[in-house]
Length: 240
Image (cartoon, rainbow, N blue to C red; front, side):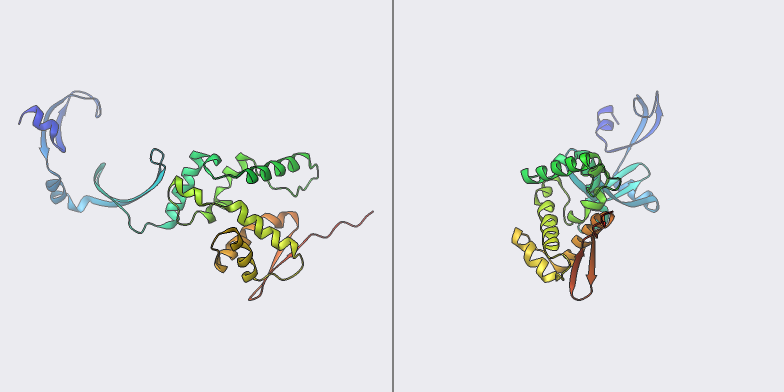
């Protein structure tokens, strides 16, 4: 077989090289077909599921691959990928893209700036202000962003996010009704005013996230099973 035919072969069995594995002159080789490889080494072929962030396409790759040692024989897109692994890959992509990939509105940026200023000037040992710096938010993506990424797998899906409005509305209605019962249905009606379809199951996720943020500063959200939620503000310190 001439050199041109060998160069066009999909796979080669190489018997003699004049240098390393990657940069070398092939002295002796024979072509082999994919069908022959799969027939002769069927017992050694492995199926592997790959989930990773494609930085060039800015999308999560979720595919089933067939490997023979270090040779990838084929690949196909997974029709029903593991949502947890898709989420993990998307969060990895978010860490590469940075917070600027999120659809920050003018209002959301202004809120962050106010919180950062309050945190900077508050000299109390136990501050009530969350750390919303870029470094802190990037370090805690799994906590504050992950619950909102359900069903997303690419950068352009992030445009759907309206987390600041949803959490802000939830906090608003709870604080306005401090000490009083707020039902899930009431919260759903309030949040749907933002143009989002929100289920009672989603409310549980939102309250869980909000509770984790508020408890360190002494604000507690009490769950009354079958009824709703009530927010309790910390007691003010008595004057000396």
